[in-house]
Image (tube, rainbow, N blue to C red; front, side, top):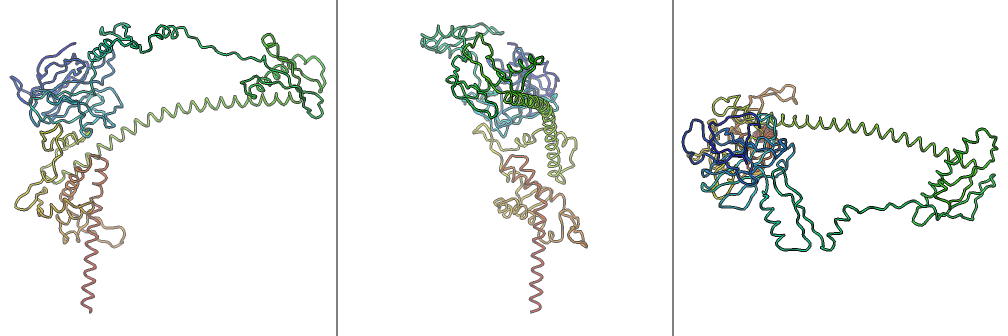
Length: 557
């Protein structure tokens, strides 16, 4: 097994091709740029030089993100799936993102809830990572290869952590298991060696059967033949009954079917024999004069093999009817075969179109997701803090899963593998009974705590809007500043402040993120913010008008 035992000379380097991967990494320390000397705590050391290990290269993208390249299968460089490696020299509460960037599978169970395995020296039992921290997607930055990313938090500095695709089962463990079975001397278990693999490993042949049947099993596998029963008409007998067919005073003799055969099979073969014989005689009788009343006699097909089949006589009218039906069925069969071939070609074309359509739908879905994330980032950051670097926002939106970045804003939990998400209150600043929501907006602490226990997005948004603007401001404003189309002479009202609207969206986003991680659900619930505020403005205006009516009525009285 080839090894690489060195430290990373440079971070963020991208060799660009999987061909640069040699053997498995061995005690490979990833150091920051410009750092010299022994690795410190937090400078991760990767190792895959053990049985069933697989990790060919490590690139450091940032302080907490690493790109990992796995080696392909033996004698098949197109398949890259398995990984198994260890990480040590960690720091307590250190958070990282591992991107395995050269997967070859287009479809993976990682998209349906599967997660990598992890264990450590103090907890040797394999466990699965939470599925919410695992993402599988196609990345344009890595030659459009499939990438599996997962977030992790190290909680014990003295532990060595091991990550794997699934539960490892090594060749040595398999040999030990076979040896233990062989030592039991079980009569029904036989172990033989067929040969050796490319890497000089034994290829085992296991036979599980009763001892007395072992020799018979080998012979039956190679020599057993299946006997196909032959069709026989030796049991056909003549029936004494005769039928009258009107003007034709002739008899059609019936035959008995053999046991075990259906009447339809016997009748079908009898009709085919009659048609074949009459077609032959009809061709021979073209030079002879025949009368309409001439009777064609059926001769038994293959008389040498079926001597007991007697001749059957049918009238000419019945023969012609049977012949017409037979030709009609043949014509219908040809039409059905042609229609079947046309249908098959159409299905092949439709399958090709569906495959292309599926690829287009997948691309469109990715583009919609990127567009929605870009809009969310712009809306959440618009008006809060300094100006936004558009290139930075673009790079964040090109990332397939922005939740990966938000994972590192959570509070560390050193008692388990995975830290619990931080509460919403930790994000906002408390000072002298006031809560700072951002952009210089302060609200009363007691009202803010009451708001957090409010049920429903609608009530939460409406109460938050009243806390930020107040009823006096809301009743004279509109969300967009555009006049309503329901009234012809409607005058547009001043719009609400965009930066305050972004604060409302951000607070609602933090609340929803504590309940779900589904991006589609979050986007749908955030899209109703303007609707909730409009409803609150309408309620305020309606209550003001009712109050004016009551005062006017009171003055009149």
